[in-house]
Image (tube, rainbow, N blue to C red; front, top):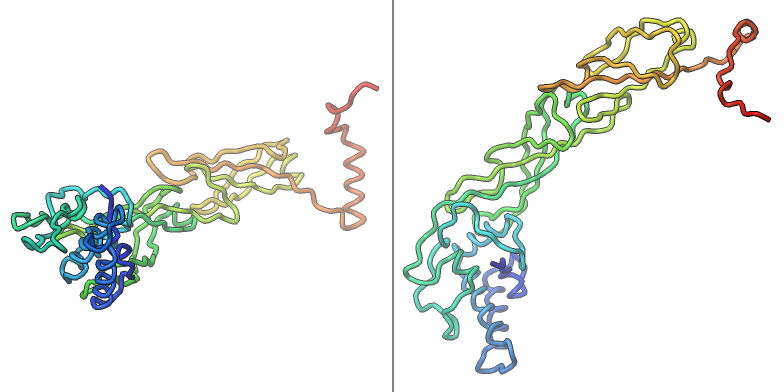
Length: 313
């Protein structure tokens, strides 16, 4: 069935006073009354106006309708009653039609029932809320707490919609990955007629890191090394999310070579690895002695890294 926006039907804002709603209803009711307006569709329009007035004039019905509307429903949405739904919020008074019309829409019937025999609904849970939480890579690795602020629109004590901010402390589990959802039970929208609150689902976003890149549960690091470490091999300290780890660089290593630190990625049932990509960094010859050493190395080394690029003349 289609969700009906009663405020839009009467051309008023959701925070309008009852007197303003009443004036809007009377003006539109006169305009579309079937006895005065013979245009096609005027009778249907008149019924829509009367139905909106039937809800918004009653503080209890309006409060219940606002509670439902605060869940994000808007006019024209394909409305599906919440799980466990078994009737309306309450009853429309017998014979309390408008201008002789007592037939209400399917939407109204599901919310409030159509007459004296309409039953009050059983409780139904509120809608779930979906939001995002942004964390750094260190928190994704070790877990921790993150404080978030949610802005919500809810019905106030007088039935009007009010915007409230709610602060929550969220426990981030170790090993959480981008796109994973964290469920906070009971932190969603309020239930209907005393029903349980919905849940809050937080989708995890991980901020970019200055050293590491994340791919699934694997962590990637580009590690600068010196030419002599690459040529002779070395044992160097490598940063990981869990602290520094000693790693062996094999002799003759070149830029682009990948080494793997097993289990040093994000934790999980199958922990990720840290993939280390070597990058040889050549220092400048800043002194005469350094230049002399480079020249000596060039004379003694019979090495041409471009030999395979030569082509026949």
